[in-house]
Length: 196
Image (cartoon, rainbow, N blue to C red; front, side, top):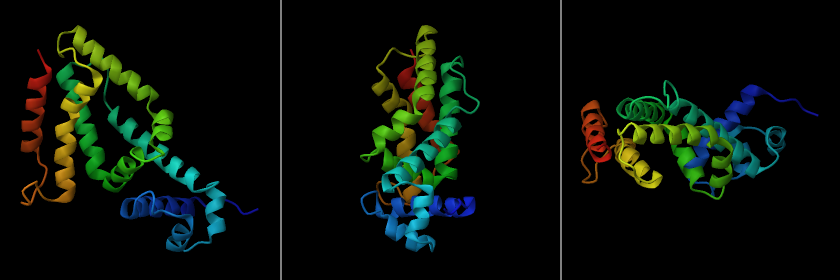
């Protein structure tokens, strides 16, 4: 039996992420991946039992890294403003510094693999964010809203701006670059909408 080569495994993961982003989940295949990596298909099966296993493991790894990053420096006891600011900064950092991984995770999240991936990685994160929301409501720093409305208002504009940045153009087709002025303008409007 052949042994695992961690360098080769990293190359396989990185190439798989690139292919999923370029070709989509449905266009992704093990034969094509092996060819792109310059390895035999049999080599892929040293690391993964099948295509589904590979996709699931990549999604779990990226998602775990994302959720760990989002909790960096964060406490559910923070003031609402400071906690939300921390969440924005952490999300911005991940989305701008790990663009390929962030795009891949979004594709996987909305694929048939999404529920299985999220079920495996969101437990602690959901609990921490729920505590944060409840604490902010109790301290009268956050209007009592449903989670879905909170998330849409709290992060919807941020993700839209980051998507425009990724595309490099605004809705009107003009060049677009995300910057601190835009971030602060959007953040202040979000705070205004969510605070009593």
